[in-house]
Image (cartoon, rainbow over all chains, first blue to last red; front, side, top):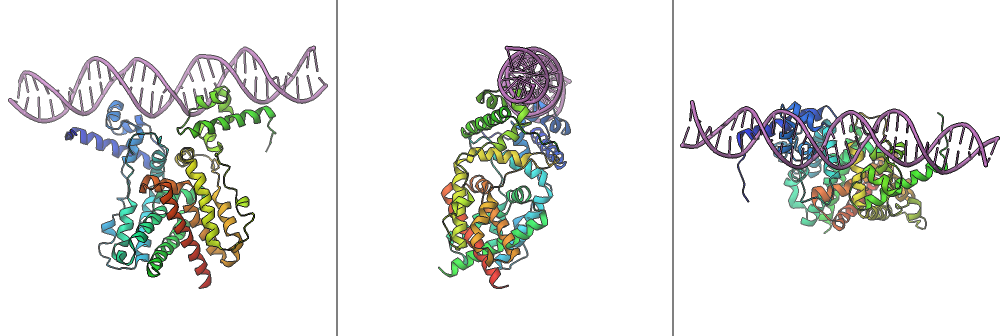
Length: 200
Length: 200
DNA sequence: ATTCTAATGAGACTTTAGTCTCTTTGCAAT
DNA sequence: ATTGCAAAGAGACTAAAGTCTCATTAGAAT
């Protein structure tokens, strides 16, 4: 438990590496550690000191569009139309996901493929649950607690980059068609959860 | 267009390689090309002659439980309860997916991460749509064509290994909890599509 | 049985991931 | 300004992916 405060120098190098990785990934292909180090004007050994594996670096690289901010998105929207709010939240995440498709695919592939016998979990960031919960916040009192949890989990299947992979690689859908299907699906799920509450 | 018929010898080594890869993947970690070649008692060069990249080999490796066969599953089930049939189809695929989790993660990671600037699409096999369509077959006349297509696409998000990744890595759910959520979600979606048809 | 060809085996070679060691430099406290 | 330490640089080294070349062998046709 010796939490040492990193020096300014360390923080600066670390930030440079992450931004360099993000810059290279936006060009669409997985960069090598050498390339990231060169782009960050840092030696390769130093890059490895900060990120023990290439994956670890790529996973933490910043997404371009400041990711849809749950609080900001609904800051001035007191509506309790859960269907519409969830749909709007999905639309917002949809934009971010499809505009960062290449980078997200790299990150997703790395987090999925990691050997399952590894130590803890190298921390997969979870942007979707806060967004879903913000969307449902004003209507949460209308759900039974169990129904609410189940709805959130089901919506998590539709939000996020995994659905993009299914639409693109399995079904061959473009972004617009995918959005149409997702919009219908999230509304149907929210409606179903609300009806479960009524009939309980 | 010179489709040459492969010799018995070629077919045999190809099969040996795929089965060796499957055997190694069942142990949970991504094998190297050397390991697969050794397991198949074949030289490394020969392995590369049949599968230009390691990915190509792993993607084609056979899934253990003969995958849920759409026609067999509903062979003696003339029911037109679409909800129940889709739920049963999902349960069947759920078993296969969670019993081959390690192998499917490897295959999924490889297919997601492939550089998008590559030639065509190295063919991702699609088991879920035939299954979904078989489940909906006896009730298909009750849907408008558009609604049917949209429902199939939405269900494709829930069937298959991507949902396992979301449940496990993002939500931290075990197989049983995941199954509960999926069961509820697929039923809700089928019901919603049926209601769309009624109100049209 | 002999011969011809295509598949295989063997192994060198390149590139990148990742580890390790040793030297140099930047930075901060005195 | 000097000193001390941690971070950065430089580069060797191993392992695996993937490519290539050349020798060998298995199998089919004669």
